[in-house]
Length: 69
Image (cartoon, rainbow, N blue to C red; front, side):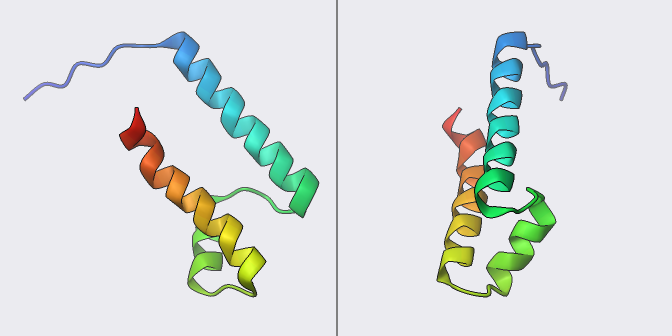
């Protein structure tokens, strides 16, 4: 089975801008670098509730974001 994809430049640009803005805000407000493996490791072994909550929110967005489109 062959899967056909269509390039969507505006949606791609918007997605890139959102990811960039989220990583800049994470660095500015929490002093953390946005990386999937670090976020997952922090969910598995958190250092506190506030640390776990933002990591869980990012993971939830990573899982539900593609489904919502």
